[in-house]
Image (cartoon, rainbow, N blue to C red; front, top):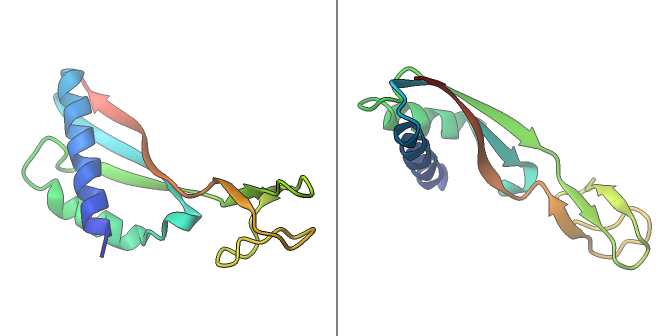
Length: 114
C-alpha cells in the first residue's frame, strides 16, 4: 500500500506550502495522478483524511485529477494515448513507446484561507 507514503509526502508538502504562504487553513488540495502511477484514489483519499486530523489541513477537500497515459514512438513517430497500459506498445508499429505523460503524481494547486 504505497498510498500511505504518497499521502504522507502530499500532506507534508501541503503543510509546508500553507505555512510559507501564512495560511490560516487549507480549503482544498488538488493532485494530478497519472494512470500509470498505479494509485488507488479511494485509498489515497482515505489516507489523506487520516493524516490531516490534527493540523491546518483538517476539513480540507482532496481533489484527484487523473492524467491519461501518453507515449511516443521513436521509430514511426506516433505520439498519443497509450491504449494498453500494461504493454505500452505503439498502436501503429507495435514497438515499445517512450512514456511522456501519465506516470507522475504531483500537487497541482491549493486553495488557502489567508
